[in-house]
Amino acid sequence: MRSLIFGVLLVALAAIGSSSFISAALSAARDAKAATFSERLAPALKVPSGT
Image 1: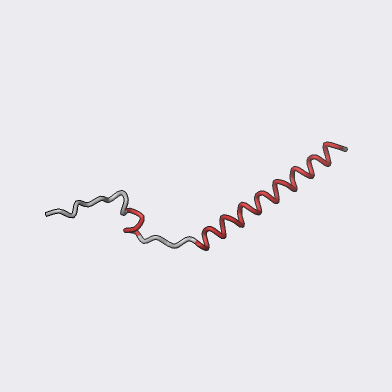
Image 2: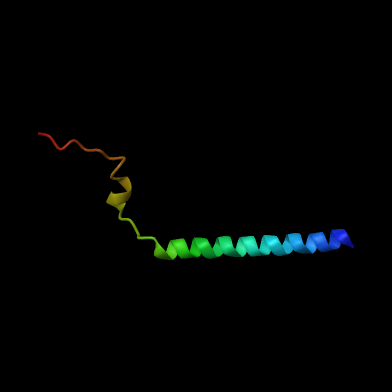
């Protein structure tokens, strides 16, 4: 009987954790600004601006 209660609590805790993780990921994706192609590659493409 204790193992059944422990199993139910474990499943409930996993469901709460996964739903909060999914909610946080969706919120972050909604709030994120879409970067342009040049903004994403600007740190990697250091082009010398000299003559």
